[in-house]
Structure formats: structure tokens, C-alpha cells
Length: 181
Ligand code: RP5
Image (cartoon, rainbow, N blue to C red; front, side):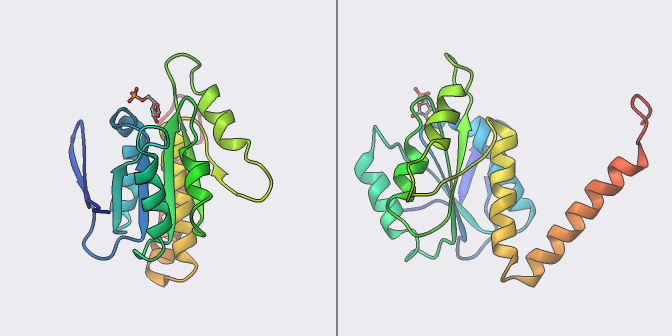
């Protein structure tokens, strides 16, 4: 399966850093990109190569199976899968790969993402998906978890992660009074 290291959003493309993609980002539809771009952006900020594709569990099931079965051999170490509605993408992906899969429930128009959340989180015993929050915060945190996994064996990433968390802490401590920035 071909992969792309460039993903576009409303503000322009998010170009993956050069090199072997370590994280795969998949989503059920082009319409999920507004949410899932948060994951791509954080990985790019951490200088971690990723690939990004639309892969639908229902509309392109063969493409999903090809993607998931070959993901580890293709050098990926973590998969982030976002989908909305009857969101079977993360679970079906997890069933076909030994890699850790983080699922992002995309906010749906009819049920505000409750459908997405419940269909991702409620996996049967024996096949695991790490389920994140609904929406862009979930996509961001999925990338953060992927970064934390990679940091276990990469000191450069671990150092950046420490710096990011320290900076986040300092930002809060610098303005601890509500309404006064
Ligand atoms: C899911 O259906 C996708 O993940 C998306 O969140 C939702 C709606 O898809 P579109 O109808 O916008 O393509 O498969």
C-alpha cells in the first residue's frame, strides 16, 4: 500500500519530517482530518516521521486489512486510528496488527461523538485499543501517547517530551490566578 508523508489541512499541508515513518495515522474519512490533523501536527512538532491515510473499515475493508497486516513490516511502531459514528476502524485495525493502536473518537453530527466513543472503547477482551477523548484533544493526546511509547527507546524524543511537559507546567505556574494572564 502506498503511503504519504504529507497531509493537508485548512491551514496548509502538514509535512512529515523526513525518514522512516514511525507512526501511522489513519482515519475513516476525509471529513475526519479536521480532528486528526492535531495528531499529525504534534508529531511534526516533535520531528517524528509519520504517514497519514484515509482508510475506512466499512468503505475500504480490504485496504484496512492490507494496511494493518503490513504496518509492522513497513516500520511503523504505533498506529493512531480516528473514526466517527459506528467507529470500527481502530478495533478492526488492532485485530490485524501486533502494534499498539490508539483510537480517537471523532465527534459525529448526530450523537456528538457518543456513538464514536462507545464503539471504540467497548472492545471485547483479548483485542486492545487505547481509547482517547472525543475530538481534537483526543487526537492530540493519541500523538502524545505515541510519542511516550517511542521515547522509551529514543533519548532525543524523551528529552523533547520532558521539555514540553516542563514548559507546560511553567506556563500554568506563571499565571495561576484566573483572569490574570
Ligand atoms: C466514519 O463515518 C468516518 O470516520 C467519519 O467520521 C464518519 C462520516 O464520514 P463521511 O460521511 O463524512 O465520509 O466512517
